[in-house]
Length: 43
Image 1 (cartoon, rainbow, N blue to C red):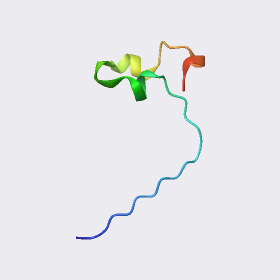
Image 2: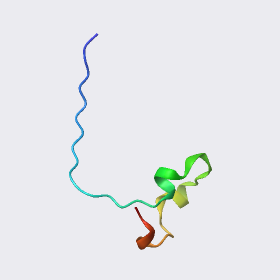
Image 3: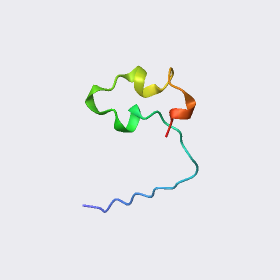
């Protein structure tokens, strides 16, 4: 079996709504998208 190498390059910043990384199983797609959330509340 061959080895797999994964490289992670950080090339910028991303602002996401809090429900996306911390929403868990109870988070809906609309809430995770952040369409109706305020921009100042993004992480």
